[in-house]
Length: 386
Image (cartoon, rainbow, N blue to C red):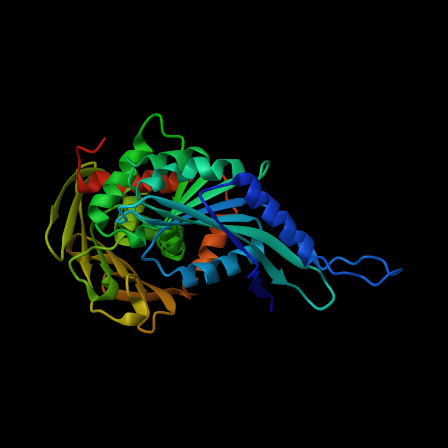
């Protein structure tokens, strides 16, 4: 198994001195090269690699040790130049400091290490809005630029606007949204702007891949389709994140948006209370109600969708996907005229955040289905959404 190490040789600068940072990084690369004895051919201990620029925006209260461990994992697949912005908006005094280092992964014995670079920017107060102009000249040219915005975006901030403008793809994680109902609507509104050309994705969307695969598979069975065309109720249950029952998970909203957008349902209205979200749709002369509510809390499934049940009128037919009690399998079940048929089972081992982010860094284009699902989720909460 590959191991990762971060070079502890680093230098801090007051403000951003691009030339000084590049000079320090060059010195680190030189220092990394072994010194061969006289008459012996020079050997290479490290290979410098850069397949992307990755900018990470995080707040000062984040677990930065965890972020560093995450980047160790990401650099296995995507060595490059990483920028970590640690922002403290509560500070009264502006400050901008930088720290450069080399990040390496050690390969099998006898092979050179593969190394990239890391620049940590500690920014306080009003200096935060100038960070993008400090990063831009340090970007490695001719490779893509990814932005991972760890907080819920504030679309009125200049920093968000400027970092998005220099990025080829933007990654957010709606599982970190403090107000999912409001934040999902804001994210959809941003993507719906005519002038918005941002290529954006959500790590939460990738967490729903197995669910979407199993749900879509019901439509692959011809005998099921006549019943599926008569669906009138959908129940989605989720395990409340950290036991907080009055905050619906963004995953549930995205799953609803995906289902409604793929089936061409029209939004009719919503009813929202502390622990229950009821969304109303129409398909022709048929009305469909989607309810989203918490299940019992279990730390093994905190924040996860636990089941989706789709039923026809009078529950003559039903189609279910549910998470096993141990949280390690997804199962399907079909109920038609009282007969129950066990369906498919998929292993469900949630990826850690590092592997999930690494996977997203392999894509460069817009995800049209994600965008349509997100906008449908926003419309289901507010039929007047445009």
